[in-house]
Image (cartoon, rainbow, N blue to C red; front, side, top):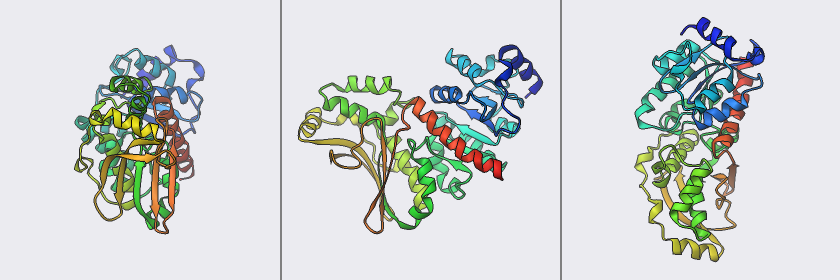
Length: 346
């Protein structure tokens, strides 16, 4: 990649003040989709120096700094980074190696066709000393037992609905004392169920989930329970240190739920939620469960709940609100600040 070409483009199209301090942690963003564009908007302030952005087609790089708002506007207009002067279409792992940023942030969507590349990117970033911040759940689910060995190098706040910072801060205790993990963390299924409980049909609930930005790029991942399985796999890797294959959990179909049953439960003061569970020893499960409204797991569509059952019988509850593009971007930003403090002291 040619920094000089990109620098000329920056001077022609960006305000003089865009470049943050040379001492600011450098950042390489992967995946300027909805979440990525929201994050770019939050980066406009100088705490980090954005030096590279990659989409599926290309990477644009400038060691002096890129203007996050210019990149966000370009991607908002549905243009590829290949349209920017100085961009290069090179393999993503190579782009990460060339940029050598302090912080590598992957907010791309889960996709089997790009998973191996995402894993290579993550390993490359960690091997070169970068901190790795992931909203991409399939990569964390696959390699979490490897990447969570040193939690100073990894961030998972956005992947876990805004609860990842707290999880990592309590991880030593949970690894010692947790006996089981339960979570209600798929906001899309909760939004659809709530709509049906309120008398609407499935299509209206799906439309609401889409309007709120809760659906995965492939909505089937929400409707069949795969997104919840991915999140369970991540925390199982972090806490129990073992790999849980999401595909090993039984596939569900949200469309198979009986609307009359959901509404009856709601009228009687109960609710239905997609519950993922895994004991320290034994098989994981995924099912639509009837819960009392007073249950700590009976969270609304704008919350995710992760419950850790401790050896003394107590329940450690982490509730997050990092759901939808902007809240997810804010969850990423919290990880960036946490990891950048470590970059500055290493």
